[in-house]
Figure 1 (cartoon, rainbow, N blue to C red):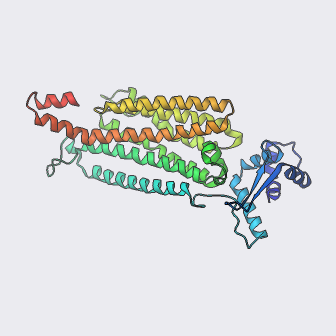
Figure 2: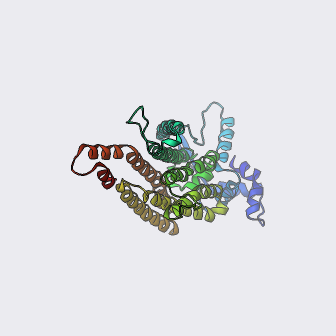
Figure 3: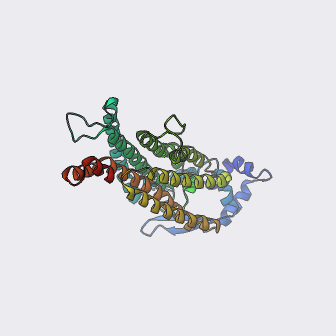
Amino acid sequence: AALEYIWEHRLACQQHWPQLRLSRAALKKYLDAELTQKNELHGPRSRVVLTLQAERVCHRLLWAVGDAFPPAQLLFSVELALQAQWPHCHIRCSDDLVRPPNIFSFVLLILTLLFAWSFWGLWHTAMAVWSLPLEGVGKRPQNDANEPTREERLDQLAARVLICGSLGTFWLLHALAASFPLRSLHSPFKRDLGCLCAYSTAALRLSRLVAPMTAMAMPVAMAIRFDRLGLSLIVPMPGRPAGLHTAALLSASSLPVLTVASAWSVRSSLYSHHQLFIVLLFLAHLGSSLGFAAHFEMVKWAVLSATFWVIVAFYTFAKYASEFSSVSLVRAAKLQWACAHMVPVIGLLLAAALEVESGFARALVDFICESQDVIPTKMCKRMLR
């Protein structure tokens, strides 16, 4: 089946090496010499492990084919051929999002439920903001003094946009891991993200369709927050000059573009471009997070926490670059996964800070200042906020 697959897609190999001359006899000779098998049918997993020698002729030919057709298609073709040869047996040569059910499926189910809950909260908050009158800026609803003001609702909306985007990023990362067609044999966390996307059609489509949407969360939340603070967005306006927030918003606005570029450059022939876009994407995430945290009014602990996590992320990223440049690809892949998980963690931290600032923190300050008689209430609120 592997021989037929390479021969069927030999034009993809000749596009990489125009001087290459292929013949079925030569392919069969190299495949027999470079393919080893290990019989584990009597073991607990009841399987036969086929291993192709790395960096040899057939391995390079398959990677050339993989530029146009993900390797998961090869595994599926082998599975169909073996199943046709032994119809009385149940044969599986690749994994996908749902089979076989294991810890990846369980984690993905939990993240799906959390993402659905966050999206429901985002929708509820957006409808609440939409229903508030514009002339009620800074005032609480007359029928309920405990209801948040429009400004507090906008902060909550920005926080829930971040929560939805961060949980969506977590879901995407673990969906890419679950889509790895060889996860029963090899841990997907020992492969870099570009490699996982190149292996599977499902992972490639997820990275190209879902990843840009999750990247939209940061610029949207920033725009809501900065407009609520009376700051200009990208274009300066009278009374709203440009500043640090403009640079932060520009950095955040580049996230969807860089995400699309990194997802569409997942090919072995464009791998250097993919690594460049991944680096720029990570740095843009960290820069926009710091710029966002710098504009909190009350919870300065969020600024310190975000700064700490950004420093940790930079250190981890430096280690990743060092391991990648020294061709320690397994360690580099693990560090890349750590960096990828830091991005939604920082997003959840910023969302928690916004939730505290818009609700609990303001209510606590109001309670303290209205319960004491030492200093005027307005001065107390100005000092604590």
